[in-house]
Length: 85
Image 1 (cartoon, one colour):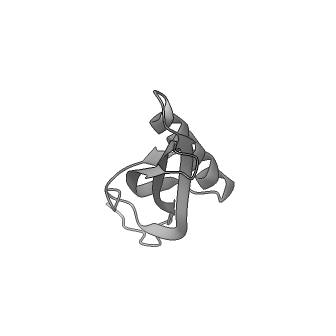
Image 2 (cartoon, rainbow, N blue to C red; image 1 turned 30 degrees about the vertical axis):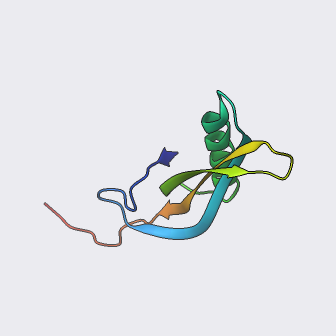
């Protein structure tokens, strides 16, 4: 699965599936855990990639910090343009 902070993938037509997110408790592995959670959610909805990935640190109600990673899940569209060379 492709993951990117950009809002497009070169040479790909994209079908938007929706927002996906990953959340984890802060710590040394927080970003990796949140990204893994995001990937699992995207896989469940059969996404080929997640674009526009962003990260945010959020306080929680129990005085702990959480890492939120989110982006847009997309599927690659099959081109109907049949060009011959």
